[in-house]
Length: 178
Image 1 (tube, helix red, strand yellow):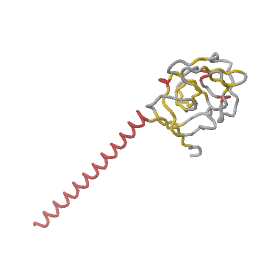
Image 2: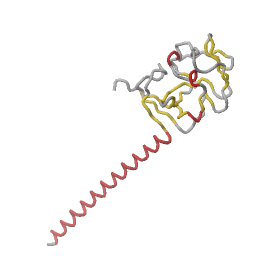
Image 3: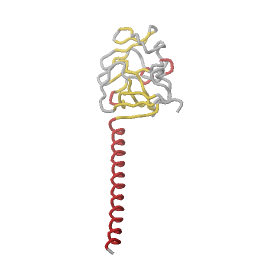
Image 4: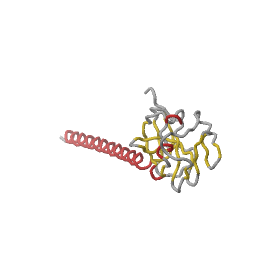
């Protein structure tokens, strides 16, 4: 009888050990999932870009990863912001204290004409929108889309308050065709 009792006790301890291992694995999965949710809710952001206003830098369908915590920007940074309920990526052209003007000759910042190597179209004013020149106040940035002819940007909605941005773009993952 000792062997039968030992066998039952042995099977119970094995079953209890397997249950503990499964429970431990589930706790690990929950902890990792919670950490990922916290990280992508409060520190980083990700979204699928859905327009062509930033061609060729960002294209429709690309995944955009951005950093939420540090909101100090310099010219040429890509930022994420909301406009009319839609997430946008736009390039910072000017920051606090700068004077932005768009004339027939193109974009000038603080009186200096801008030569932008990544821009293939001339920067022009829109018929409606902001009156130029515009001087940026403390805590404001001026943003433009790289595809200047068809972008809704600061020429339409004016200077953007830094507090209204969602963050700075860290990386872009091309995902078209998937």
